[in-house]
Length: 88
Image (cartoon, rainbow, N blue to C red; front, side):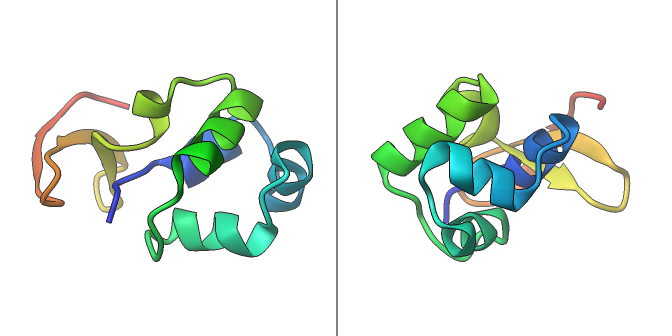
């Protein structure tokens, strides 16, 4: 699965899943699945979401995950293992 911090970026923007869905044209169910890392989104889906959030895909997808216990963002490799912190 592709690591993502979509939920945190969306919430940081004060945006609900419904609003992101409406503005991006991506279903709310798909957004829920992406946030839960239960699906690998297509490139067009990633592009639509990032355009609404005004973020580069690499800022939301691929290289970062969140350590829920420490509430810090951590750099991750593609094998889902976090390797270091970069302060939130």
